[in-house]
Length: 487
Image (tube, rainbow, N blue to C red):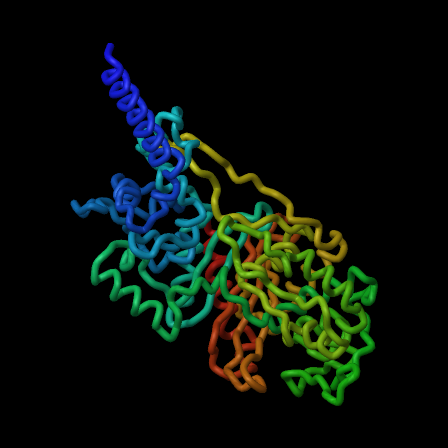
């Protein structure tokens, strides 16, 4: 071979090696960069080249997919979209994913390598395996009962199985249809703009992502703290509670909603049943900030790690307060804030004899053939109170429904415990108060609790006596409890 031919062959070999190195750099090393580049249409085209997996309630799919025939072929559809929007969230070709659609996106989109028997082959061919499904813990009857009972109201409902932590219902009203924003084009764009600009915020998941002052429902936490700390040893004996109660270190006095309530030195059982602010404000100060904070945190307050699997907003009980602020926080005011899910956890812990279970929304994930991939086991969050305190709290919550402010939650032949709440808000508390009710139900004393519920109604009519009597929220809780008990 002549020197010229050898040089030409060497140059061709060098160019070939350089071309091979560059191909490896582009297709392997730089692949993630190009995949994440918004200008790369191959990723969304591949993502929507097959139907998305389904979210199931009671074995029935509440989601689906339809072919458009376009580049982004398969678009998400929803059955009873507004009913299940707080559970599913949305999967949009334009706006991404939210809630369960986001938390379980790898399974639902087919991107999870666990779905494939040969994940390396799928990675090389860039063909995702068939997507899997997500089976939720939602009870369809409870979900429908809650949604129907909240018709015309702004607020939320969260219901749990106290024994397992399974979320039985998540409702937020007003709601929206996730299918309206699932695709692309002017229709989806117009629907999105209308939803995000709406004054009543239909896309806000009030059950998980909105915190409210819990009002008198928080007296449940204060009562547990007082009994656990030994500040109260007998719920039927008088407490040392003046009426009105001068807030410590302040010129302000704390009174009660009802002028006719005999709250001075009232026993804890009576004070809880008719919701004496003065008794519980003083109890919070007597218990002290440290024990109050520890009890609140045992219920899940201040914990950002709780996931269902979507992460709810963090419910807050301040860690630094003066005595007057602590007294107000102990009746669910000042800066104390809670999600409906959090207050359902409070009711569930009492109902479950003091043991709080982790709330969870996903029962299991399965592959395309229905084979289980992951099963969510029941886990204890912690022992919030001992059984003696829990039994005392159960007696107190039953008294609220039988003789106190929660009579509208009573169900004939069923043992129901509850606590009403009126949460004031706005500058100088001028806004219409929020109506709260937390409750649980069991067939009889000694039987396991079947359901725990929290209901909040925003902008309730400002008839405070009606709200404190459970006029707005208690009937909603009763409807949910009945639906679960009939199951």
